[in-house]
Amino acid sequence: MTEAIESLPDPLRAGPDGVIRVGRTRVTLDTIIAAFTGGATANQIAEEYPVVALADIESAIAFYLAHKTEVEAYLRTRAEEARRVRGENESRFDPQGIRERLESRSTAPDSLWQRKVESARRQTFAQKFMAGAELFDDACAVTEAGIRMQHPEFSDDQVRAELRRRIALGAKPEGKLLEYTTEAP
Image (cartoon, rainbow, N blue to C red; front, side):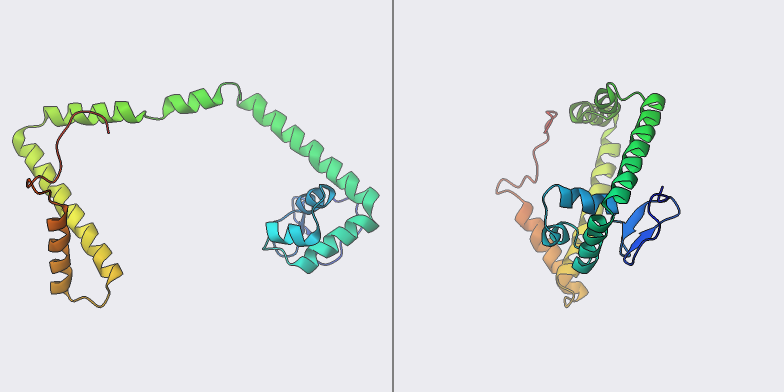
């Protein structure tokens, strides 16, 4: 792919795939030159791609301007290769209707909610009670971990006291934490 370009100055380097990259980054010469020919200055490109040093961007642009014919031939070859690969992929994987196919695979929130409600309805009272107790224990463990992260200076007693305070704050005046409903949220 880099046959049209005899030798590359530092900071440009060709990888095993023939793609020319700028500096010790994965940013390609194609990307820098596309931005430059699109009207961006070296400073604007550096802002857009902060992993590339401004000096490396300026060197890439200088190389392009000094070897315009060879670089443009390289860019055409890269564009042709991209079109070929895209065509191969589209022939193997029909892009028509891909959004609809992907959306049909995902579980719609409403149907997921309905399945959860139906599953809960089939449980016995004891199963529901045990599931609630497990959820409460899990929520307490997660909340304790959060308290410890927020307040590493707290002792175990202080963490438990803060957990109790937060649980008490969650209670409504009527004494109910949450109202059960079978409606989707």
